[in-house]
Length: 139
Image (cartoon, rainbow, N blue to C red; front, side):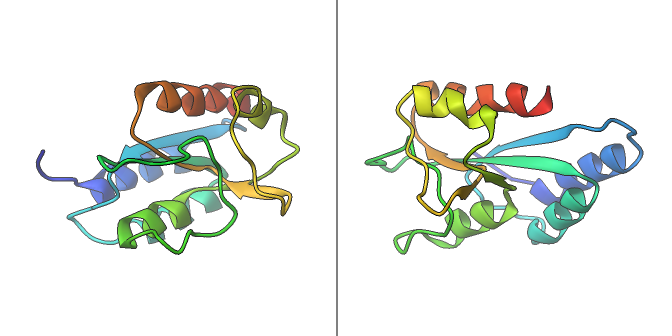
């Protein structure tokens, strides 16, 4: 519904997290992936270097056939905003106990043994399920 100053927001997070002594640092990004103030991927890389786990929840108005799915590589049908959000997210092993909440809710994990903390959703229930994993990762 307007501007998306994602880089400005990520720079603020980087300033905060780079000074933090907490062992577990988590950032949840809920966006359509269309930053209008630059390329956010570099800032996300710097956040990951500060041991920040990044969850990206890609909002879409399009119908998503299987929104309860995590990926290990980009889907061929995705546009640039999808891929950018996917690349910004952290990688986690499928064996992480945090992912058990998603599996219990019928989410699909890739067979490769790891996935990105990236979900594409268009329903509040799926967003809530994905967001619950944040609490488990940060514990």
